[in-house]
Length: 119
Length: 110
Image (cartoon, rainbow over all chains, first blue to last red):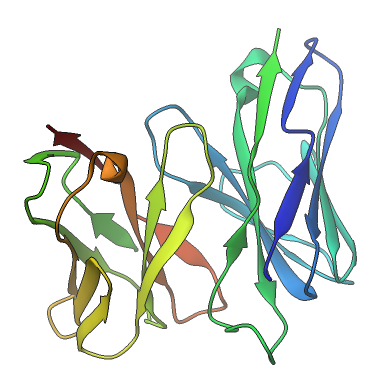
């Protein structure tokens, strides 16, 4: 159990276009999902916390109008990078925290990540 | 503020034992986590400590001292596949956010 998928795994887009990344918890329900970005040889930086049915909470310095997050159901959150620029090229990773019951509620389960390259 | 420190890089020999330290200063504390991350992949969960003491899980053990803001991850009987980055993360007291340390890149040599 506790599988999180991300789609796409890799994407290359042109500067100025938008890219949507999906994060799905496949075998559990998650009220909270986190979106991280990671630059090469660096650690994970939390971008935002996504709660089902409410607006995402963004970390300081993360533009909410550029990184649109939607958490429409207990198993799906999406991150849309709008008007992408080369500096947005990064590894984007989502994670999901399960509802209490069954899986440990303190744990976050990571998706496999999405490698975004903006040309 | 919140700050987590780890050594940037460590090297050890196959079959040996290595200890990776982590110190933290966070507003509130709801648990400390260790993750392993291979290049280009997502992190995988290794351990969770919320109370002081040692948690052992096979070749991996993790220790926590909340009063000292200190944890370590101990890896025994090192194998080549243990070459990876090891991330220390703290779950803060406000909300549920996880704060990650910079990660320690471990190289296991034959």
